[in-house]
Each structure stands twice: as C-alpha cells, then as structure tokens.
Length: 498
Ligand SMILES: NC(=O)C1=CN([C@@H]2O[C@H](COP(=O)(O)OP(=O)(O)OC[C@H]3O[C@@H](n4cnc5c(N)ncnc54)[C@H](OP(=O)(O)O)[C@@H]3O)[C@@H](O)[C@H]2O)C=CC1
Ligand SMILES: O=C(O)CCC(=O)C(=O)O
Image (cartoon, rainbow, N blue to C red; front, side):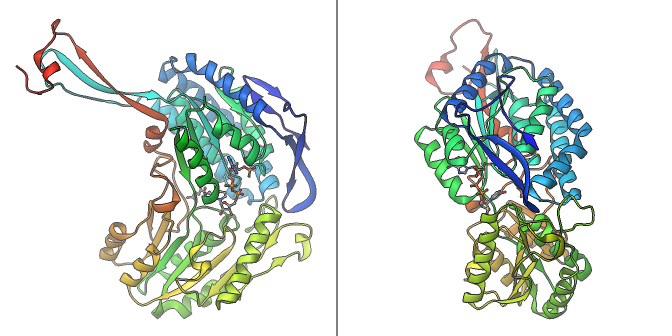
C-alpha cells in the first residue's frame, strides 16, 4: 500500500486538511492500492506560490540546460518503466503491455522535448528599414496548471509537462483521483532528476476542490486539461473570465470505415484493438464502425468471433487482453448506455453486461460489446461512452461513409481501410478530424506529431509535436535598430525605406 503525498517546492507534504482518500484496484475492489491527500485551496496556494517563485529563475536557465533535466528524467523513467507499468495496471486496470506503452510514451516525450532545448526556433526576417534587424523569439507563459485524467496516467502528464518545462515554464499538476499512486511515483522520478525546487509541483485531490482552486488561481497563467466535455466547458468558462490561456483535449466519437475493397483481416485487427483496447477508455477509441454493405455480414461475423475469444482479467496478469473498467461510476455509465441502445432499437450482438465470472469476481469488468443496427441519430452513435462498446453502421458508398463519420460534434481520430489510393486521399481531405489513419486503427498516436481534434474535441490547440510549443510559449517580436537615429518610416508607419 502506497501513502501518497503532495510534492510542493521540492518537499513531500501532507495536505493542509490532514484528510486522505483511497485508491483501489479496479480488478479487485477490496485491494487498497494507495491513500492520497484530499487537498484544497491552501495546498494549491502553496504550490502556485512555489511555482511562481521558481519561475523567476527557471525561465532564465538556458533552454539547452533545461533540456538536461528532461534527459535525466527520461533516463530515470526508463529505469523505472517496469515498476511504473505494474503500478499502473494495478491502479487503473490497463493490461501490462499497454501500461508499458504508456510509460514508453512518457520516455519518448522526455527525449523528444529535451531535443527542443537546442531548437525552440523563432524566425528572423527583414525589416522595412535599413540598419535594423527583426526577429521573433518564444517566451514562456509562466505558471502552468496541468489537469490530467486516469486513462494515460504517465503519457498525458508528460505530454503536457515536457513541453511546458523545456519552454521555461513551471507547473502544478492535479492528477486524476483514480491514479494518485502512479503520479506519486512519476514525481519521485521528477525529484530524482533534480529539478530545482518549485519547478514541478504535484497537488492531489478532487477535481471540484483542488482542480477548481488551481483553475481559479489568479497567479496561474495557463490551464491544460484532458478530460470530459463537461469539465472542459466549466474550466474554459472560468479561464475566459480571467483571460487565462486554456488548452482542452476532450475526447471523441471516433469512426473506422471499412470499404468493400479493404484487407479485411487487417481491418479486423484495427477494429478489435481500436474498440476494445484499454477497455475502450481512450479518447481515440473506435466507437463507430462504418461497414460497407458488401462486406458487412462477413466482417461482422469475423469481429464477433474474434471478440468472444478476448481474454478478460486483471491488467497485472500477463495473459490479460482486456482489463477492468476504471471505477464504479464509469461502469454504471457504460451499463446505462447499453440500456439506451436497447431503448433506441439497436441490437446487442455480443456482450452488453458486467461480468464477475471466475477470476473477475470483485472487479469492474464489462464484456466487450458489439451493437448492430445503429442509426446516426441514436445517442449511442453520437455520445462518448468510454467503454468497450462499438456501434456497427452500414454504409453504401464512400461519400455516405464520410458524411456519417463527420456527423458528430467531436472530431478527434478517424480511420479508413481501403486499397484505393484515390479514396485514401479523399478521406484525408474531407474528414473533419484532427487525426486520420489510412489502413490503421484510430489509436496509436506518436509523440512527435500534433495530437488533438476539431469541433468539440478541443479549443483549437494541439498537444505533442512542435504544436505543443505554441501552447506553452508566447511569441515576442524583437526589433533591433542599429542605425543610431530615428528613421522616418518608424513614426510614419509607412513601410519602405526612405
Ligand atoms: N479526453 C480523454 O482522454 C478523457 C475523457 N474522459 C471523458 O470524461 C468522462 C468522465 O471521466 P472523468 O474522469 O470523470 O473526467 P473528468 O473530466 O471529470 O476528469 C478529468 C480531470 O479533470 C479533473 N476535474 C474534474 N472536475 C473538475 C473541475 N470542475 N475543475 C477542475 N478539474 C476538474 C478531474 O479530477 P478528478 O480526478 O477528481 O475527477 C481529473 O483530474 C469519461 O467517461 C470520458 O467520456 C475522461 C478521461 C479522459
Ligand atoms: O491512442 C492514442 O492515440 C492516444 C490516446 C490518448 O492519449 C488518450 O486517449 O488520451
């Protein structure tokens, strides 16, 4: 059992309230994994004050030197990969292979953004005037509040923290209440990497308490949140009142299209892991499968057959393919959506129930579920379920597939399986989503490319890749006049050199 603490100004601290909460194993609910602080305004105040103080010096540390901390962090994370992955499986349920992948994303992210320490390119351009240089430089934003979910408890904090730090910001992280132990261990790695006190701070607690206090704090310059649409809307409203920069990543209703000319075996593997990997608890999960009528029956049969062979179990069991659902609330939500599907007239081809069979007793397990006869207007075709549930929809043409795929308020990930190169490029052009895969599943983002979506998936920002640098920096335009006189065009604002 782990006793988690806040990490503020380089010290491990209990919360001001003295209250703690519990984190339990979703595969064996009786098993206590950790206790963690129930923090509030006072803890957030301390963390933000420490981050503000540290910012004064951290912003002046040369970026290549800041990068050295990230390299060290990446190396230490690699050393502790197995330990972190096991704890992740235990605390939020994802199978070990996936948990290892989650930690690996954090490592990749650390090395990738460490490299940025020697780039962080600005621009130089010509001035309108003689004897004058013009350039742009990236400046840090200040104190960043990072609010993260439970489904990628190492990768997502690293996606946010690594670019924030290399750009010269300091940070306060409020992790999900479902993954405090993993986050505590992640911050031990930050501590061991030797970041100066106050540069990285961790405050555990509830979203409505510690999370809200962080968002509302006047000395926090930026909020980056990954979570639900509802939380995103609440957070954005508070930030708007304070003119605070906010970067939101809020999920999706992602579709995979399988055309009649597709390699069906390949499309099957994509659909299976896109829909049921991480028990469907990914913002990029495949929740709609748009199947061409010529292959629908055959593909459905193949999918049902493969789905019923999936091995459910605790994430920590190396034989497990599908782990538990993260918590009871999430399990209830999934169950409610199955009820909605029944009411709307969809047909459950396989799954549709909680399961406690055999070793699954005492855990939050839900059977991988395939819904057929789903129509575009149904709630199960429109709302994010965040569980192992996929809706099958029939399409008659490529144009119809794109129209249905786009008929959603979200726009994160998308996928098309076809052998027709023209259709592939058409898909790339016409799909309204931040990410499009051709002949690959809707999951599997890489850290050096932008991640995020259009419409209600976010608010126009991207994580990962060089795009994240635009979130965590402001542009400063610098003019250097070495003419030694006031040039006329400067005051006339008329441009050409006189
Ligand atoms: N885009 C994605 O990857 C994710 C999407 N989701 C979607 O959200 C649904 C619910 O999951 P859930 O974990 O409850 O998601 P939330 O949006 O509630 O949680 C995400 C993070 O925000 C925090 N939070 C919650 N409310 C506030 C608030 N008012 N102010 C500041 N921070 C807040 C949470 O804290 P706390 O830990 O206390 O809840 C958590 O750290 C899922 O079913 C799924 O649809 C969820 C996770 C990831
Ligand atoms: O699978 C992916 O592409 C990344 C998913 C992810 O980061 C998420 O669901 O939050």
